[in-house]
Amino acid sequence: MNMARMAVTGGLTVLLSLAPSISRAFWEIPSALPPAEHGNLLIDRASERKGGKPATFSHWMHRMRHTCRVCHFELEFNMLVNSTEITEAANRSGRYCGASGCHDGKAAFGHEKPHCDKCHNGDRGSGKEAFALLADFPKTKFGNGIDWTQAMERGLIAPVNYLSVKPPADLAVIKPILLEAEWRGIPAAVFSHKAHMLWLDCNNCHPDIFNIKKKTTKHFSMNRILKREFCGVCHLTVAFPMNDCKRCHPDRPNLQE
Amino acid sequence: MKKWIAALCLVVVVAGLAFAQTGVKKKRALPFEYGNVVINNFSEKAGLAPVEFSHWFHRAVFTCRLCHVDIAFGMKAGATMIKASDNKKGYYCGSCHNGKMLYNNKPIFDSCLPKYTQEDARRCERCHSVGRPVRKEYDFAEFTGKFPKERFGNGINWEKAEEDGYIKPIDYLEGISIKRKPMTIQSDFTINSKVEGMADIIFSHKKHTVWNGCELCHPEIFVGVKKGATKYSMVEIYDGKYCGVCHIKVAFPLLDCQRCHTKAVQ
Image (tube, rainbow over all chains, first blue to last red; front, side, top):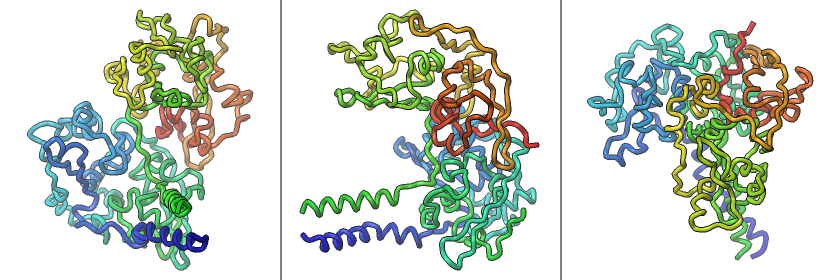
């Protein structure tokens, strides 16, 4: 086989093997769920294998009462469904869901009868009725259809920010950052540390997801983000989704907070 | 035809690299896994399973200094290039694992014999355990059940565990360690953070010398002749240098930001 033919075959193989990833990377945003289900998960590590139903978890219900920091920092929940080794024993010994101040049988129902099917019901839409009561919350177009940060600022919700590891009261806010877009004609994205620090601890994002020195995070591009990397770790299925372009890429960036 | 296959392999590898994930949250080690180290310099070549070393158990029994200064273990898995023959001569693991030294009134099992019987092979597996169905003698939950708890890492407040008498790490080995008169401990000091709005660090020599002495950090990791002589940044620390030598994989992890960045912003 001569070299030219080899190159062509090789090139074609590359294209063919990458085609699904390319189309997914550019055009496929996870399909929108009804607002009451955005961020809802079905967790099934061992439930079905053991004859139970997958556990339903509602992000919106939990974020009304606790910030992201509490579960994803203090309680060590990972950021991908089914990757955290939540077990009945762990819950009962006060880890994960069963942490003291959460589902410990006092603050909220514990891991025991008759509460089983409150979580183990296999229904991603459970809790719809409670969601309907949030009709007068500040609106957005996508995700849960609720601007949670504004809801917090207006005092409609007051999520607890820690269980035992207190965040420092005076951690000063680091200034907003302007992130230049890769494509011409797309306005720069504005990243607000302040809005994120309302919910998160430093280490939720640093250094695993984003490096701590400006402009040193490699491969930080929109097609990576759409594949659940970087901003996409949260802003696809839990925080407001990517359909809401202008929320990050406003026409006129405002760097004053 | 072979060339074609080679080209295809290359394409797959390149595509794999290009689409490898970055920018995602890593899975955290569970408390009983945290600090465990796999050592495989020579094991598999010698037909044995790689070694799984438990920091949590060894730190409950020995100070860091004893192994990393007196016995001369490096600070990176695999960097020490431990050989069976060295262990047998009483270096490295063999300093304690010699069948004679006592712990809990029981002799500590011997390491790495030049020849071994079927019966001895069980003992090999106590360390050469990766991928083997080995039940360890000391179970994490059982051993540390009553220890004072804390978030992150092993989920144990080791400092308090020593204060409360749950652990009494050995700091001196007859014939290996040398007793020196202790130096006075410098009082706590502040390390200024570079990012505007970030709380400064309060560094306690007192807390660090309990298990490390001076030699573990000075002069190799921190020159330490004068405050400010060693320049380092958080990026380098995340890279496994300076504080990151210990505080990524063994001592409490870096994600516990406020454990070091405690001094209020003025």
